[in-house]
Amino acid sequence: MKRFFADMKTVFNAACVCAVSFLLLAGTVACEKKKSAPSERKSNVVFQTDPAGASVSVVGITLKKTTPAECILPAGVYVVKFVLPGYRTQWRKFEVKSGSVTTVKATLIPFRSSVLIAAKADGKYGVQVHYKGKYIGETPLVLQNLPLGDGEVLLTKNGYAGKREVFTVRDSLPPPAITVSLNSNRGRLYVDTFPAGAEIFIDGQPMGVTPLVFPVGEGQHQLELKKKGFRSYSRSVDVTRSRDTRIGKVTLQPLPAHLRVTSSPAGAELFINGDSKGKADGRSIELPPGKYSVLVRRDGFDDTVKDVVLNAGETIQLNMDLDTLMGALEIVTRPAGVAVWVDNKLIGRSKPDPANPKYSEVLRVPNVRQGRHSVTIVHKRAKWNKDGKRTVYVNVEKGKTARVEQIELWVPDIKILLKDGRVEEGRFLYYQPDGSVHYQPRPGMGITRRKELVQSVEKLPIEDE
Image (cartoon, rainbow, N blue to C red):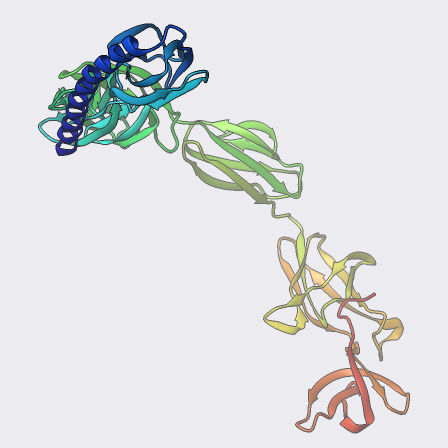
């Protein structure tokens, strides 16, 4: 404000000086006109301002043009005044010389001022201010360096009715101030559901869980309710300022459950709560949430029954093993990785037991008829067994499992290349402290090859090639 008064004082002093200059110049021009010869030449004068459009007065005479403008004056010294609304008046002294073009330029300085924005909501600052479509901050704040004329701000705050305020900036003191108060535009919304505990979203924003009463700005909103295992519920709701809006107890619809049943072996017939559902082929069966009895049936096998509880929106995969009326075999081999045959039929290859690497995991062979059966293991590198095979016989009883423990082949697991070019195979036992290798070249026989005689030791693969 002090600067503004100083500027006004400067303009006033300049005006007084220019007025005196006008009087002096008028007399000077009059005198010069009396003394000048009739043959005195006149010159062209060009007036320019930034911005253009200012009115021009020379020696008290206002031209009927605005800048840029031209006129013809006799030689002499003059003072020109430029006037443009919203800008400070400018004075320029210039000299016109006979026979030349004189250009007079001026940069106009616009009047500037400020506006105090001190709007409140419920007696508190923090109202958001938008000017020319942009958010510029929260109250209290000052809009500075504003041109003269009309302007507009938008005042907003969540939960309150927005306001547009128009202001006018004039070349006067004090500057305008906006001190309006925003009125609350909220109503209360009550939401309840069955079952309770549904998440509430208003226009996509989480508000809490049902049942709940909470404030919402007036107008139309999108309400959405979500609960695990239930279908989402959505609707539009109109909220009125200072009033309660109640959304009655909304019954959420449970999502259906899905059950997928497979049987081992495949091809069993599926029954759910006693109703036939076709084959247990893993297809999805849609069911209401609840408890179910699931039965699979196949000729030659015992019925298998399981109870299952299905929750809303849940998918359960149920794999049901059928127990045959026949017997079964369980086979453990040493080493793992050998081919296993039962009654001259290849069953598979044994796998290592992580807990005991010298032996294989249990290889189960279901659906074996009762009676005497041959179990043969084969490995190409097996030694001290005829044709690299070993066969044992086992009796299987109906409905029981016969176990074949530690059926064994002697299979080398290392290959030693000696520095003299010889190659030896055997079962590795251990390395001695000096690096010598101790191994079995044949069952029951252990020897040591000194480190200095060994070029390399290669571990042979467990599985048969």
